[in-house]
Length: 188
Ligand SMILES: [Fe+2]
Image (cartoon, rainbow, N blue to C red):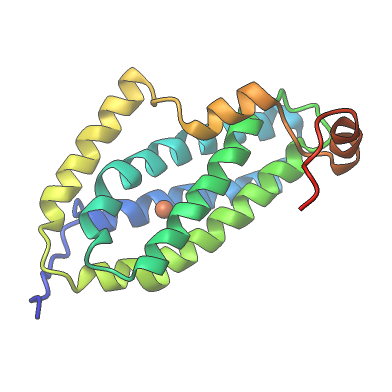
């Protein structure tokens, strides 16, 4: 059985992830209290940047380091939650803030992320903490990649490609009109 690797250093990977979570949760709270569009847009831009950097370092470094030791369904669920969040982020990035769905799209994104954080902090991170893994070394890798992403930019993800080629799909009524005018699924 793996020996637990105990560390309480603030730069260990798990603490870095939790600090990021606290930062975005604070931004979601600020958005809810914001009184004007200018303020809201600033908060959304900051939250999107934080979330993109955070998702990238988790996907590139943290998830691969722990995935094989943890429950597959739990890791797959985290992947799916990232996927949905990235779709919403890609849509928000194409919007200006004046659109009908803009504010509610960010609210749904924040609900999705709060749920994801609850699961990570409630299940994934406590399970990871018990593993015999050098979380200080992973923490260093997370911080280094974070710096690099903030300096050089974040790689374009599949969800951004999807949204930029298809467009924003958040009005069921508008989409159903579009569907009627386009190709049909073959009957089963
Ligand atoms: Fe995550």
